[in-house]
Length: 112
Image (cartoon, rainbow, N blue to C red):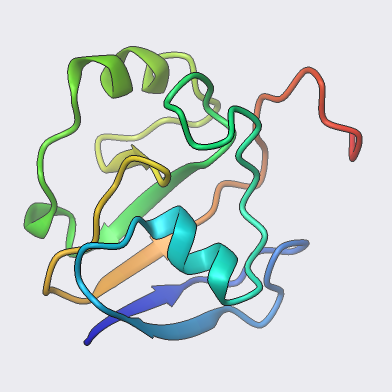
């Protein structure tokens, strides 16, 4: 099992969270399955940036982002070198520390 450590986020998981998942699942699916409501406006089809996360530890264990994912990350708010779209990022066998950015760009979100 791989441990995903979500850092505290004011709205989504104020206390932070630690979950155990099997390798092969995406960060977004793992979060959703454990009541961490990461936005995913495009229904996980790599067509937006709402599920942007920053992998603070374990980034090098992940497969490289596709060119399409990189193109969308260029449009994300607060992108950093270790940023990924959680819907496209498949968990491997190394534990990850994940930060959910404070803001997301979602022009159609009903929460904003």
